[in-house]
Length: 619
Ligand code: CA
Image (cartoon, rainbow, N blue to C red; front, side):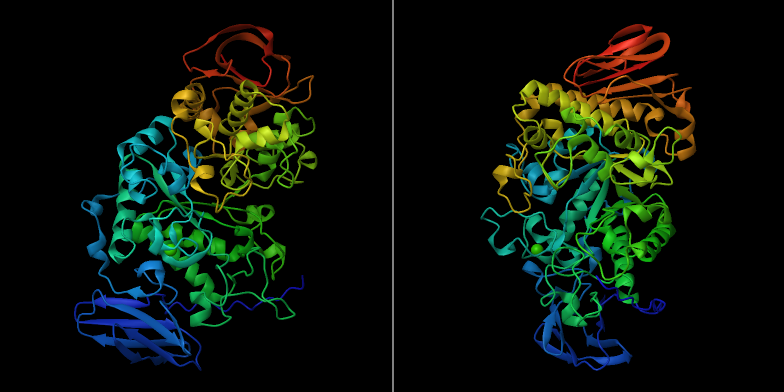
């Protein structure tokens, strides 16, 4: 696609997207709109003409106390709540003037972010409705408040994850908030109001305060449990162009076009935003800062980060660093189509070295384990298909340069893309594509349940012993399935919901996940967080067989109390012998069980690793 590069003038420091400034004696409105536009703001029943404050900045003041009134900006006859509404009516149609102080739940002033070093983070990706809709004793199934309930907090704490990544929770369009008594489901990758919580997850979408307060209550409860809250942000596209608040306030400003004048579609959703334009960049910066400052959000996952330009991603990193460098940032280092600016300027995985402090999902490791994204019926390492060992090794090493990893043999990356292992998200499944059990069933015809469980645990052992930042889809710990549905973005609850009865039925699976996560947390060797330390302490062991990857974390890596830790991943349907440095070792993982206190002893220079299993030993 031909490229159209828009000159990047410096961001106008004087402007901020505070479109509504409330005080008890007046409310001041401000809008970024074309200099030749006709701009009004309708406040309650009153229409106010907006005046040009500067070239493209319009303002109006409503005298008196306007609290609780609705407002709409009208630009050349097009009505919208503007681009930065902080409170809205049902379905986000109009803005509402609120005193944000009044939305704070009790004790909010004392709420603190949960920040830890990037290498200590363990991400649990969840959808509000998946998580709680089928939980029998949930008081608020499918709502923000479900995450304030004891059963939910207890489950997360028991599992040991320390960050939840909540799927889009800003106001999106695909669920009708006036029909919440009917089952409706959507992931929510169709932003309407970027800076307001979605109404469908609140107990009363008609009350503009409720969604705000309940969102904060959720954050507060998670923080009290030591769990960070990561927001899934989708600045790369809007649901459509014509009805978007961007387009209604400043036509064509926020979107990229091709050289031929068509809207570019790097998002695969019909449009792509133009982060390189100063005011789109500023919008993104102010939006993430707003979520941090107002809602105490601890991190951000950028949808299709490969649509955004590198400069913008780095500008966001720099601005968040001013608040707290521990705010985590990661994203999808790809786009879903050609973008209207060149790839070398975009936040692609291949460019992540130019974006220190930002991580990208490793599709390399994911597909090395489960098989290619392009074909659900194809397996890879887990299916016992040789050829993915080097990609898996790269994933274990956190995609950093390592003397024993030959990146020319890695599936999607021909060079180490990460500067630090914390720039790689290690995972085998997420909300996109099939969940792990479905993928195993699809790619290994005739797979039996015991084999499925073994491979599930083997896959997550690779993920949770990787030097990257581990990430799991919620419900995998309960052997979730989605009945084979590949793209469940609008599937009914029956497909997406987590079946909590599985916690009993598959208690062995849950316990393995729990113990695996516990072992990672207790042992710094598994999350060294530094590329030099990875190169120093991580040594891959030679193996005679395909579909076996073995490695050692040696010499008290990261100050670990264990001296040498050996991890062997065997995806074959038969047991494999692997040579190890001669010695006496404690077994902590074998036979689909993990116990840090020991499961037995090995005194040898070789070990037999069970079929489709991981073995972990240490001395
Ligand atoms: Ca909505």
